[in-house]
Image 1 (cartoon, rainbow, N blue to C red):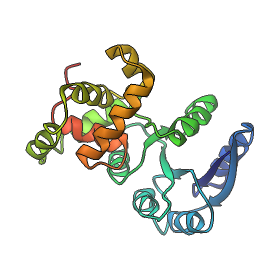
Image 2 (image 1 turned 45 degrees about the horizontal axis):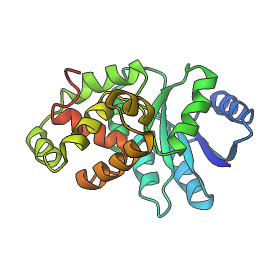
Image 3 (image 1 turned 90 degrees about the vertical axis):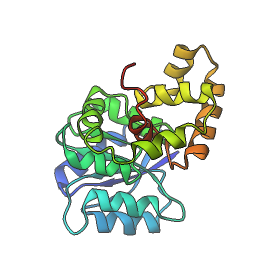
Image 4 (image 1 turned 135 degrees about the vertical axis):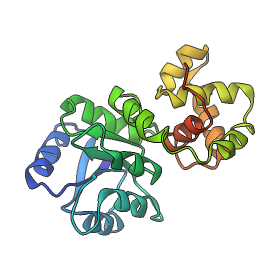
Length: 218
């Protein structure tokens, strides 16, 4: 069972998400919050596996809440919710530790799938909207490109190939197909990559890869 926290200041949106998640027997909403501060408080009171967090909320915005959630002793994985696919705040949320983001008008089945995917340790950089956002905002903020290249140089050639696919938003299954590897081998490579790069999750690894120039021309 995957325990979920839903944080959104719009009561109707929050109710809709709770009702949607309740249709999946593998998910249970154990807490709700109307702002970021309440979300962090609820996460401290409950065992949360995945938090759906709106970007724009009163008292504490979703970006700050994401950073606080990821700093908890037992941090939940975070999916950022946003109305606009080119919202500059989403990039900040990803760098704060979010495992990905969804648009609020995403197909309901995809929202449910996303919770399962993120709970399993994968990121949500696959949607085209996510790629556009990262291209737009991340390429405009590359002061650490040299450092990123130095960190990537620690990887083996095969790990670098895997990281390049991560930068494109590929899932483990897609990487396995593209590189002719077993999915279990890809998972092991990803784990070593995160350790070598000093990144908290595959989304942050993908952002660092973009800084290093990987994935730009694939």
